[in-house]
Length: 228
Image 1 (cartoon, rainbow, N blue to C red):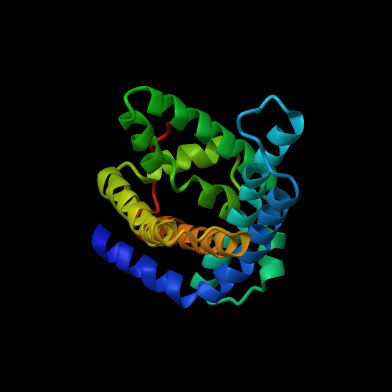
Image 2 (cartoon, rainbow, N blue to C red; image 1 turned 90 degrees about the vertical axis):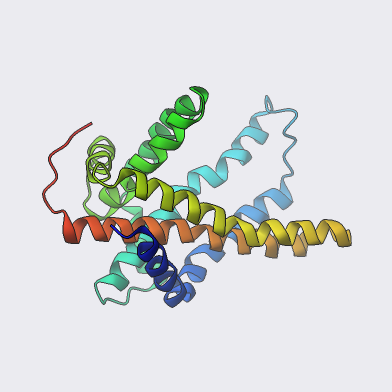
């Protein structure tokens, strides 16, 4: 596996389908920003039930738009042209499975991070393909996690290294934008919305990368026998 070639192909694939990514992400960004604008959260008082509920909104929406992105990338890879609503429709069928899977992944990775951080990072690399098995192959959350674990065994270190590199690269533009805004002392809701939108859309680069890894595995390593 040439991981740098995978990253380059991921970027090219992401750039070609950026319009579809925007159409999927913008409604989510608007909903989340609207909720936070209308219901400011005081993170110093997380015992407040309303504050906790509002803080969970992005996490609850995650399986919905993430599944839509997975369907979008696979449909374009297959040469199909699904609309945004069709991507959401097909993706929503995996909502519950994906939500439970993300919760389990979050617990496992958090526990791993508590064990000197490295185990948590390792788990990210081994489980990063689970959402594709869950959405595209309609596997249960346990089957999806097991399939990702098996699929990433042979190339686990290149996959993890590529994941961390893409995560770093996608975060850099908004990081430097934030620094510039702080220097210029610019702080208003409109600017925050656009910076948040850019950050959310760039974050999809990680999904484009993991999809390219998934497609590589499916094309080149169809027989997978290892289990968790």
